[in-house]
Image (cartoon, rainbow, N blue to C red; front, side, top):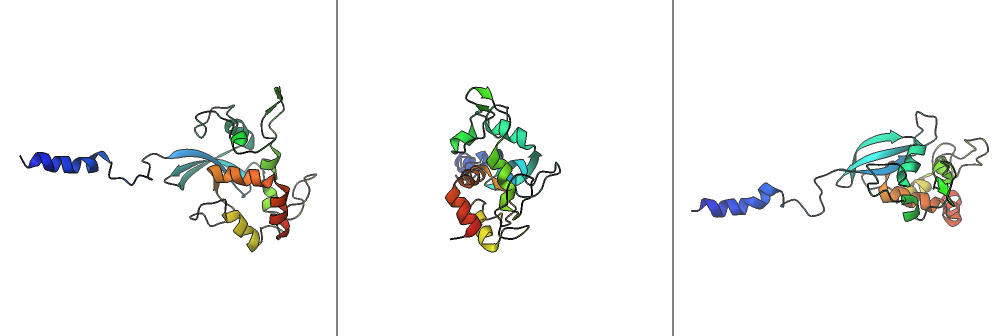
Length: 186
């Protein structure tokens, strides 16, 4: 007779409900990027990150064009199961391949401007100068600003920038006041 109450006490542990409420037993896919150069010759790299309990546990590089199509919901994605326009959701303008009902191409200027966070000079012909205070890396002050867009377990300025934080950074890069703060201090 004592075995049944003991079994009932052990049931939550056996079924996994003893897990802390913030923890998830499943990893999820999220969009993101790093400020590392890509094998394709881009001055940044876009990824589908695998995230478990708020930590990046895997990454799959994807081309910027695929990133745009998947993040807008126009291409099926494990990181955008509802096929919503994440650029629109986070207030990022100019990143939809379809503008005004017309296919406008796969241009997303703010995504293409990620290199400006890392480089000072004109790294790309016709793209203007970068915003970094030093030639090939952000200054210590700029690195502190970039830390606000990464989790504490990711201390390196190159990234990864994942999920909502990545989209917040892209949105903020479109704000001239934020660019001035990043570039010039203040």
